[in-house]
Every structure is written in C-alpha cells, then in structure tokens.
Length: 108
Image (cartoon, rainbow, N blue to C red; front, side):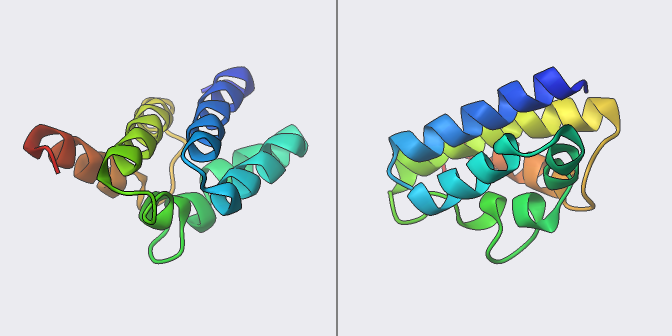
C-alpha cells in the first residue's frame, strides 16, 4: 500500500468520523494525517487504530448509533483490506476486518 492510498483511506475514515460527530477520533486520525509519512505509516499499524478497548476500530462512533457505526466500520474495512493485501498490518487488523465483514453480512 503506497502512502497516497493510505492517506486516501485514512482521510475517508476521518471524514466519516467528522460527519457523524465523533470529533475525538476524527482529530486522532487528523493528527496522523497531518504528520510526516513515517508517522502516518506507524499510525496505520498502531494499537491506537487497530487495537482493543479505546482504539478507533473498537470505539469510534459508538455513541452515534448503529447506522453511523456501520459507516465507520465500512471505511475501516476498506482500509484494513488494503493493508492486508500490502502486508502492512497490526496484529489485530485481520481480526477487525473479519469482524466487520461478519457484522455486515448479519446486518449487525
């Protein structure tokens, strides 16, 4: 995954977060986007993005409700699939991608 594609995917995540009113996580992603390429690449495989409790994947949009949360999950799913294809992942990226796919199929 090249840096331009990474920026594009993370920008989409940030836009969705901002659109649903999750300013905290929109700012977290925005801070990563405003940094140098190396910091952005580190963020893309970080626990802050893909970890457990408190991560973007786990918590973003939870207060907004299910329809909005699904928008975030879709944006993260697209990012995660690209990262998996490129081999640039966090230990939990595949778990989250699989969970988001499962939830989409089940309408959860």
